[in-house]
Length: 217
Image (cartoon, rainbow, N blue to C red; front, side):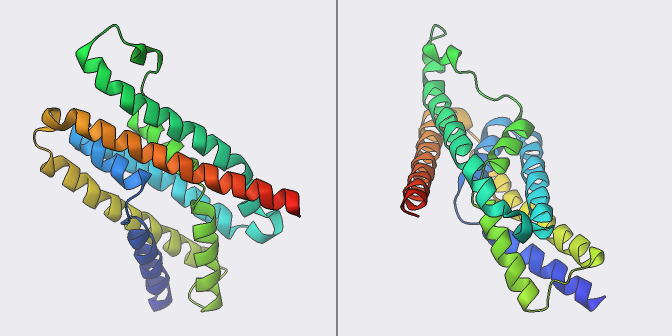
């Protein structure tokens, strides 16, 4: 039992620490909690965790034989760039919706379901596969994570709890810091738009770099 508790603890610790640095997922959870409430933010967090656990399970199952890291990146990067650009555009245009109902923003409707948004943002996050592939190998080499179903179950359970706890901190901050969200609507939309735009440029840089490296090879 101590071995199971240890692998669960490591999964929880890694996912919790990984959820704390500012990024699209935790700051989106923060923004949803501030603008739409705890229930919507909780659905978003649940979707994020479900996708992450699926990624971890795939990474644990035949990842080296299937070369999932490279294959996933080749598809996820361009789709992630498109999604982030779309979210950035809708965030910027959402500021104009308040001032006029006859806006071009109506042609770019926002994703209403926070659960669907969580699924998309988490699934199209290209950093998840290399992150968990690396940590799985590290824990395996240290003898913490063993190739057995009970170990995988406790490991994945810890990861889910860690990510939920990390996102829960941002959700709580978003709910209780912005008690008067309407007064900061334009500022938060501008910030989220710039955040999505910045991450899309970062993914573009990674994508172009990989394409150039592939051509050289």
